[in-house]
Amino acid sequence: MISIKNVTKTYGNLTALDNLSLDVSENEVFGLLGPNGAGKTTLIHILATLIKPSSGYAVVNGNNILDDPCKVRSSIGVVFQAPSSDDILTGYENIKVHALLYGIPKEWREKRISEVLDLVGLTSRKDDQVKKYSGGMRRRLEIARGLVHKPRVLFLDEPTLGLDPSSRDNMWQYIRKLVEEENVTIILTTHYMEEADQLCDRICFINNGRITAVDSPAKLKETLSGDTIRIRFEDNVNQSTVLSKIEELSLLDFVHNASYNDNWLVITVNNANKNIPKILSYLDNVNWIEYKKPTLNDLFLQVAGNPMDDDDDAEGGFMERYARYDKS
Amino acid sequence: MMTMMQREVLWRDMLGTISHNLNREFGQLYALWLREFKVFVRERSRLVASIFTPLLWLFVMGSGLGSTNPTNTGANYQLFIFPGIICMSIIFTSVFFGSYIIWDRKFDFLKSVMVSPATRTTVFVGKTLGGMTNSLVQVAILLVVGYIIGIHFDPLSISQTVVIALILSFTLTSVGLTFGSFIESLEGFQLIVSFVVFPLFFLSGALFPINNLPGWLNILTQLNPATYAVDALRGVILGQGINSFQTDIMVLLFFTFVLGILGVLSFRKMKAI
Image 1 (cartoon, rainbow over the protein chains, first blue to last red):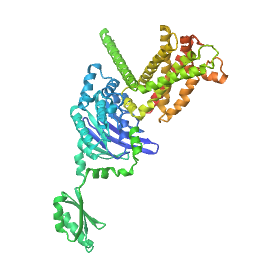
Image 2 (cartoon, rainbow over the protein chains, first blue to last red; image 1 turned 90 degrees about the vertical axis):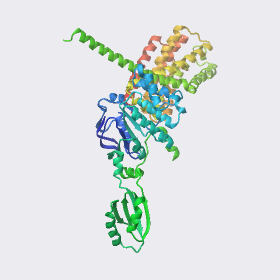
Image 3 (cartoon, rainbow over the protein chains, first blue to last red; image 1 turned 120 degrees about the horizontal axis):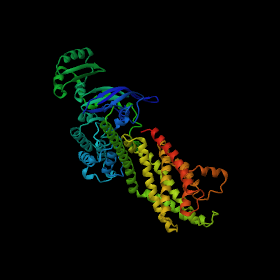
Image 4 (cartoon, rainbow over the protein chains, first blue to last red; image 1 turned 180 degrees about the vertical axis):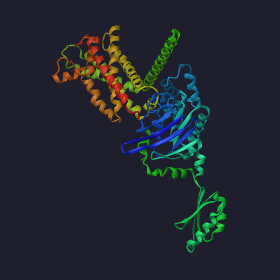
């Protein structure tokens, strides 16, 4: 459905996308994950023909984004990161304007508009001005708007950015519903690992404009190596004793890995809750023990790098930047 | 060789495609216009503000300066500037309307239009249609005010006024859109006020007769499209035009053509984000 070939995008010295290639199949829910500034939004803007790649090309629904941007635009729906509906118009009017822009024939325009409004649960509020909507409603309206012309591909750029946890859950339900009801390929960007896990068939990690991993959420989680136990011994324990213990421990079937450095014995195991007592039975003079379950965020940090490395300037729309500016 | 029937089918297909495309184009224009119109109708403060300023000029400046009688036409000064005030309201509304695209971009509405199959030219024309409607509503209100201060209208002068208003507002909305297409900041708005709106107004002969100006000022007024609209309106409404109606309209249409093309080109070049 989408095929990206060696796409590079540079802004002066900054490389937003670095020779990126990727294929997305039909009716897949595909997640683009990465820290702020990783290049997710740039990639979406390129696929939506809003900006041109510096080199490389992409084919969306059989049309090359460079040769036939108009055909590409007809076959995609885009929900931008920042609100892009007109808040003076009503929800219904916003969708109608878009239905007309996409040239939906009169015969089924009204029917389709009420269909998408119903899909996102806004039928009862359709005649209210958008400025009376909550953040989540507004985002849902924009999803409905993006779907009104029955696109083959729907881009959702950070669909839950700035929503509170309950609106976020709510949004997930609507996205799942539209996956079931609409015959559409979805490209979703997010920096919430949990969100990608919940919604996506496949996840692609992007960092500094490069793909660092692509796979299904389950497979990606498998690459994480179980719970991590850290143990410190009393001062009188010498290193050779510990090393011999490591050999013993490594033979246990629930232990993945054991190593000793900086006076810490680090063991990765299955099910630490159950196995810590067993491990302790092998060891004497333990002074301190702690353990950590891997979270999806560890995967994020492991694959995507530390998000603190990147500044998050110049992302999002005016209002969002304005809001951030306000906070800082 | 094609048979008659094949040829007929081909023709029908072609006409079908053309009418389909036209339908689509009109739908897109209607959509863009509809959005502007709804915003205009709902944001009444915009309308009130843009009507109030011309009234202030008409009554305060008209009466105040009128008492010193700066014109040598002998006519009532307030009546003399009335056509100029109509043009003034068109100048302000149209140029501002065009430059509101800076807002559209700031709030990402423009992005959602840019990602639709509507061409840049369609977006441009749709916007100008919205600007023309706004101007026309204001002109209608001002015409009522004109009637109250004692101007006599007939169907011909009203329809000529409408034609002039439409042409001028198309031209100036193009100017606003051209500037709006490359100015990114809202602060740039202020530049448009100082360097576009006020010069267009002051150099149009809206407030003073232009047949006796110093050379440099004369040249500047001749280069201003609004000058010809003011002159045409003055001719139509008060019978005091310098050029004939036809001449004014021809010059105005020339400006419209040039500035319209410039607007379309700058829209095509405009960055989507």
